[in-house]
Length: 126
Image (cartoon, rainbow, N blue to C red; front, side):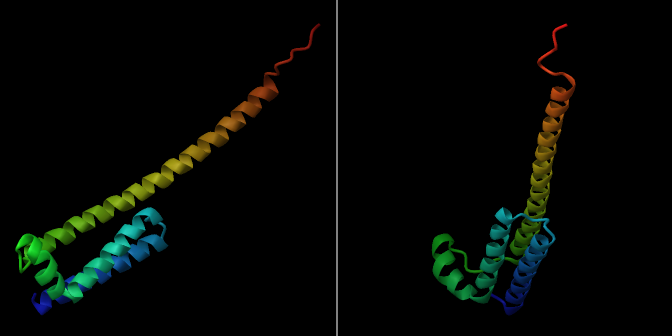
């Protein structure tokens, strides 16, 4: 693998790692999804540092490919960014639905208390 491609892939994997950390810090990415992104960034970094081992011994035996095209890598990172975006959206929607469920429960409790206060079950006999 060309050294330039190794440097680009390594830089992109570090960037992915840092972006995931920043999204976790800002609470825009939930912990469930953060493990996936952090491990993906780490795996890509390891693959970019030692591509000869993985390409010549592991991937080459399985697929027969000895060199990955730069176009494929660009497409892979583009799709990776799209999936990261969807993870952020899912995290946001999960937080919103949790907040809505909690608000609903509080409103239901308040409604029951008001109903009990203004519509007593035991009406006084006259």
